[in-house]
Amino acid sequence: MELRHVYGRTYAAVGATALMPVYKLTDTDIVLMDTGYARLDRSALVNLIEDNGFRLRGIICSHAHFDHTGNVRYLQQRYGCLAAAQIIEAGISVNPDAYRANYVALTYGKSREYLLEECFPADVIIPADAEHVDFCGARFGILQLPGHSAGHIGVVTPDGVAYLGDCLIDEGQIAAAKLPTSMFIARDLESKESLRALRCPAYIIAHKQVLTDIGPLIDRNIGFIHAKGRELLEDLEDGMSFDQWIYAFCQRENVRTRNEFKFSIVERNFANFVDWLTDEGKVEVRREFCAKHYFHRESKAIVK
Image (cartoon, rainbow, N blue to C red):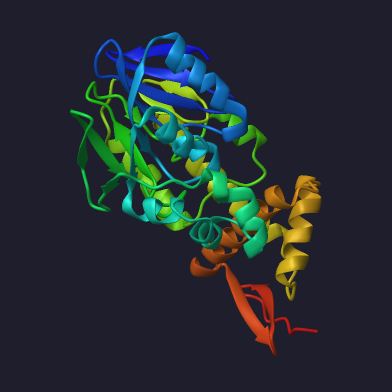
């Protein structure tokens, strides 16, 4: 695993799908921010730590998604390091049942099968209003950036480098994504806007870029969400059920996965967009007995 210098004592470990910031407390003691996938990044992370003679003192988690927390528990057990997480994310990450309730549309049994390894106990809880955390002998700035997940945070290293987690995605991810991953889209948009106030020497985007100017990328991320919202409205024919609507979306976007875990994420994320469009007054939900049907807000159509 390559270790790229970013600024000062801040580096980025290049994982399979994401950058994981590394802050050097000393020449040997390090703090890691996020840990990548269990299957894809574990052996490479261990090699990075041990080949360089590093001592992993702690991990700060941006949010409890499996591509960021896949190795936290393993590293805690292997190296005896501490893990810090924002209070909401800490409550989710400790238990696969909480994970399921927040992120994926899986059965109880399947959620435990897929997510148990991703769960970990946080040693340090970061409050939901915290602006910094003293961790492993250093002070890290905390950016409260909810939206992508309920308690998503960014982390500012003592050098002033801002790790933004998944609050922004890079141009490659925008081009490839069928739908932006966002739990609370209105909050996510507010968090993205708030990044304009930052003045940092460098910004680390988890997927997968280091920038010195994030203004254009903020614009692209916000525009991407609104564009996808418009596309979903174009997919909607008045009177559709949820299943009919998501089927139309999957046909247009050529979503053909048979992997139930991956599709459960698509399904939950699609539901988040539907909720946002409803809150924004673009969509009306009408109930016929126990069935929900969706309409454009201005529509006068009758459920058939």
